[in-house]
Length: 166
Length: 91
Image (cartoon, rainbow over all chains, first blue to last red; front, side, top):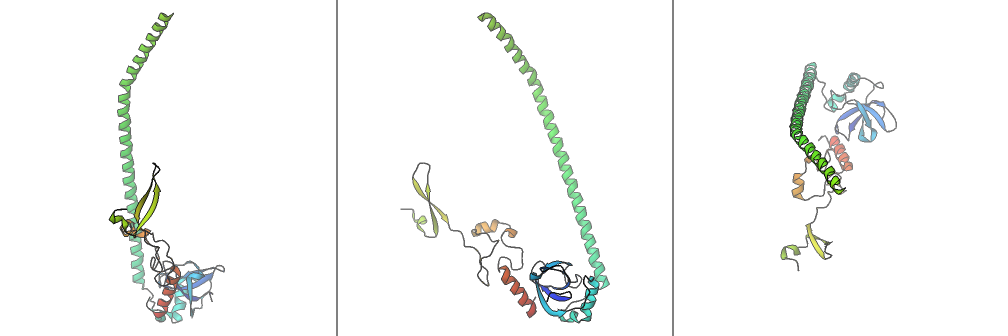
């Protein structure tokens, strides 16, 4: 049943309910499947046979055929009318590619901006830390000599006491 | 006798021993039961057993699986539904 060229419906996953064509048998559980993506929204990927429902339709293609070959074979077998598929025109493909590029550019720009913000925030945090440290150092410096003085006084007192005891 | 508001049988009772040694009863609202498949009645996974007020606070993605009919049908029934919808032509 699950041989190269078999038309199936995907019954699980994000592409559930869409038509696909088996392109390669990987092993007892897995096959490689493709929409083709331009006709049905099924990308070329590995699929578990339990997530496919085979249809009585079968298409003559070579193993690991390209998406275009599969689409041609489906058209000649009359499946476009049967499943109400439509081959996108060159214009539509161009528009899709352009939109994809735009989105990719926008996401790259967004990531760059986010990085900038992060670096700026980190720099500010570092500044604040440095300022805090400088302040604490200033507070500590006047204390230190006072502590030393107290220690020195204590030392001078102690020998005086011992001398008295003697 | 507990005060009238606490006599309702819809409250869950739990016996608690206090540090002083005495036993008291703690009252709490009962949790809802686990969700079931709308078609076959099997238990559904991924839906927390939590009171409606808490459900409203949880984010949507933590309340049901991100699958077709997630939270409504079990995976087996979902598959059958997808198949039957495809062959009927209503997909």
